Image (cartoon, rainbow, N blue to C red; front, side, top):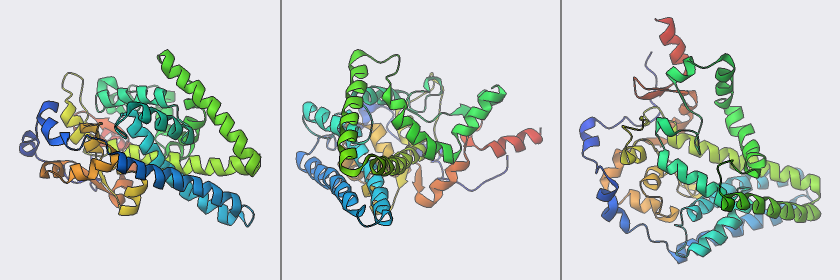
Length: 352
């Protein structure tokens, strides 16, 4: 395999890795101060996120009287803001956004309506992701489809084609968001409990009511086009952020018997260092290593926690520019402990 430009900061040497606390208990005191939800900060986020999202819909309504050239840019901004709505939804799912569990559930349901995602069902699937992130033997729920080199080579021609298509940027960030939010989230998983199943049906019912109301106001064709733009932008950006947080060259993956929670959090989740405006739109979720270390830390405390201890500077960091190079990574090479590209695999096989 030929050398290629790094997609992240170099992986810390083994000596530095060994200096990290090795269990959740070791992190407890360090993280405790950041795990307390703040009603004041959460309320302000609701105002500047939900309020701005509502204002953008009002603006789009009046913009349609002028020109689609005015309405479409507003829809794109609304799509970006939908990522921030989803982060609030995400925090509610971890019961970390507000001090009250009931308040988290109410806000989570409403945010799920805006993001087309059933709250309790998503919460259940996402908890599986947190418990199995970077575990090669527990892949498949709430993550990006990832095959090892050996699994790919042993796959049928059709499975290889399906995998390649799933890794195509146009499919992954363009088609997949619409398919996932418009189709996949409309049906519960077969393993879901009654509560999770019911959350899907309630979300569907509320969506029909909201779509009917907005169609009456905007006209159904106008509403569908605006909503499609918002879902494509917001969903595509959301999948992109999730992708780069776990799909980078020096990521951490391990078999179940060797898997370690702390390593999965700090080495298997990147620190996505974004410009301030993008950090705001993405609700600080670029500090994903902190989030995986403790999902009970609300998004508005993540940056402060990251800066509280120099040990967090040891995590893999991605800049915006470097993150685009992760698109060439496709397969996990267990022997080299890194993600490689299809091209790398072809070269390796050609060299024998």
